[in-house]
Length: 331
Image (cartoon, rainbow, N blue to C red; front, side, top):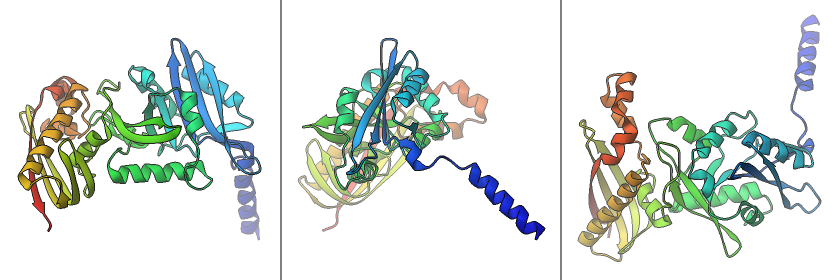
């Protein structure tokens, strides 16, 4: 009997400490952060929680990101929560500065922020982007965004860039953030912004360039690949990267099995190799180690102090690449 009373008491205490009911919180689906001069601005897209559904945009300003987030919370009809966040979007002007790293570190330290949220950059005013954030399918914006992201990644035109993944990369790899824009008042997610090892974005990569990068990373193994000279329908694809122990050269071997192509086999191999090499050169110019060569470089170092003596951010852009492609028709 005594044991039963203790269990009941524990259950009561645990229940009394649970989180607030969902009705007393506004769960942001999208969070946008920008900065102009000394002013930070945060926007959030939240459900209206009214009959018939719908979404509203709230915003807050401050002289720091923390102050802007506090103002954002004050602008919400109920306490703002980031536990259901699907996208964290930065303005391109902010992303091109060291403020990007500052914001990522500060936001990731929040206990309520969903670390599996996709991180993106936009070239349109944040208010315009937020207004375009409407469910393309169904009535839930969160589900609609999930489906759109899954579709675009399957097509290879955008890369996965979750906050949790970015934090795990550390010094060994650089992310490529999703590019989000508005076309004809509709949300568009394709292309990507390479992030340098200093934590700032570089030149935008087109959807076709992201496809090639996805191919190089071994993530795009099938589907329609668009290259400058034509298209190819992939049945299977593989990629093998190797960094020389001298840390001065690196090679990539691509193998393609395809069902149809607008090019001959020889022309296809040459075109893919040249296009892939152009993407690798763009990454080098942006000092973005998107392929994670730093992971291999660490293995060549005897210990972590030796790794830091390498000065990888300076060495990486100087690496000379060779790309070879083997294509075979499945017909």
